[in-house]
Amino acid sequence: MFDTHCHLNSFYSSSNHPYFHSHSANRYLAVSTKLIDWQPTLDFSNSHENVYAALGIHPWFVEKSFDVDLIILKSLLTQNKIHAIGEIGLDFGEQFRQNKSLQLSCFEQQLAIALKHELPVSLHAVKSHNEMIALLKQYSVQGVVHGLGSSVQIAQQYIDLGLKFGVNGVTVRGNARRYHELVRHFGLAHIVLETDYPNIKLPGLVDSSLDDINLVATHVAKLLGVSAQDVIKQTDYNAKQLFNG
Image (cartoon, rainbow, N blue to C red; front, side):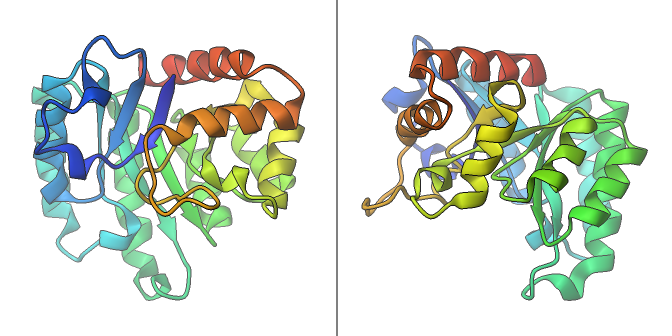
């Protein structure tokens, strides 16, 4: 099973953790959010063949000096095996909208980097779909809008651009109507699975776990009336096509 979006910072000092033994059938796209994450992410990926590194600046952490960070990112891309640019995107929620112009500039430059290096992207989009879609139309990148909970109409615009959307533990919640609608409408061809570990907790659980992806797959299967194995097979195929797994 391929977890296409997880934050593995808490594991970086635990090199013998059983999740990441090379014989594990699971694959993980370890996304990063800022400069300080990049080298630990690369080191962890280099020591675990089933962990794939994604480097990027998350919209929450865009600062005025981001252009200097992007110079470092470009250098790392020439020296390391990197599977994606991410987590990147736009967040115009109340807490972050004052940084809108910087976010837009940083996001566009990261899209340009992804396009130049022929890398997929892992995208964060909150209250910013119009701006994000407009930029994605300019930069023909592949990738995933992670945790997408939009309307079918907005999701269709991403699908039309060749992107997938990531389904995580939010979908297991009984009141997650939009997430359920997207899964049912688009089916397995357009989705991948993710945990967004440790940020998403399943209903009734105190802690999150990388194992939660199994329950996500089971719930998607119920929504679509197919077997969990069918869900795993197709979403793994989708993820491997995107992230060179």
